[in-house]
Amino acid sequence: MAATDSIPIIKVLFTLHEGMDALDFVGPLEVLSHAKHNINDDSTKAFSTTFVSLTEHTVSAQGASFRAHMDFKEAYTRLSEFDILIIPGGGVDPILKAKAEPLGLIRAFSDLQKKDPKKERTLLSVCTGSLFLAQAGILSGLSATTHPDSYAKFEKICSEISQRDLAERCDVVEERYVVNNLRFDLGNPEENPYVRRKSDARRPSMGRKGSNAWKESNARRESNARRAALRLGGLRVITTGGVTCGMDAAFYLVSIMVSEEAAAEGARILQYDWKKGIVVDGIDI
Image 1 (cartoon, rainbow, N blue to C red):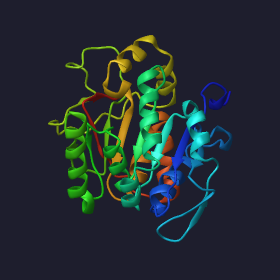
Image 2: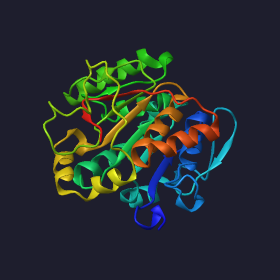
Image 3: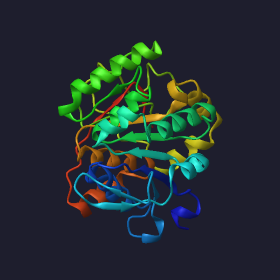
Image 4: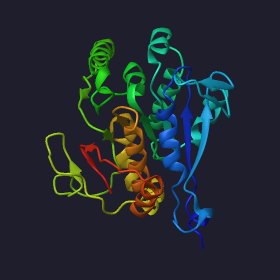
């Protein structure tokens, strides 16, 4: 029996905006497109991808044009279908100034998780896409990163938003990617070997991950209850450093939602050296 007979396709929605960095979008797209539950069976692809934009065609900073599958009006009506929302960076200033999309969609996706914590959802920003998350108030009390050239701007936005919302500051760190709100399961967090705290220098364990864990995470009553008690209803929030770091974070998603084998095979095909980031205050199982 093929894996896809029992494991649902993981649905991913990419936002596109004028002036975005092409590799912020294409890099994670390439990684996810190679992920299969059975690395020897092309019929077991793990992810389906959909693109949303204000206009049918979106031109990147590099002059490449990408065609969207839907506009934002349709995206709002279908948002509950998606497991992962990916936000590319680049060209962020006009959007921040106008408070335009994808800011609204980011908030809606976060609100959806808080209203419906039974489903495991992931919000991933690439490069300066994290500035959108900060502006939307998603990063308050979390740890996050962005492109090194934008640390000062990022810190400023995080500070302004924490004052606006009377919320905790975001802890800005220098990493390839930073993961908040991981999978949770029963057990004492003080004794669980998968916990990684901000002060902990250990790398997270790579055990007990993959498609079965993802499927069970959405089905188990205990997991749902634990997730509901977390910040943002347990929404997994991932931010990345500059450009190629988005590929690293995408490989992380493949490793935890499909398998380590699938991630390793994708890296082999792309001839890419997957560089690990950090996970924060979570039980990654």
